[in-house]
Image (cartoon, rainbow, N blue to C red; front, side, top):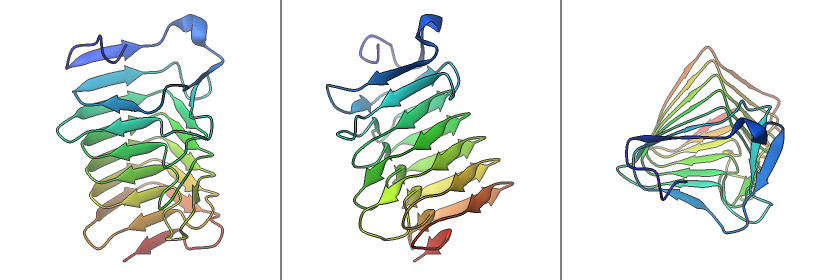
Length: 178
């Protein structure tokens, strides 16, 4: 669907997939154009990395909106963002990575009404949920229960948090600024 959808297009999932988990067997889904991906609700549809692959890689100059999905069990971060990503009404969970388990942001990231939980930073840098090396904004979201910290905000990172909860992290603080 990604390849067949024109830049600026929308990918919708069939209602018949409600309650499903889609396991990725061919590797990372690379998004190199402007796209909107609309799931069926974070409790209704999961993209699963099978503990072997990243789920999304957003390339520079791509402007992507993802909503209504659960992203789980990724390896080397669930999302690696070099472009512009608006993630809403979604869950990023149970993923791991060398420096960030959930979202590794090198571009522009906005997270709205979403949950980032139970991820692991294998290098113990403090960014198990989100590693921010760009510009990140959290609105009405929760970052919780991540192993080795919630958010790592690098010295070149710009982080804004509005009406969000950062709590219950193991091994590091909720937010680590370098």
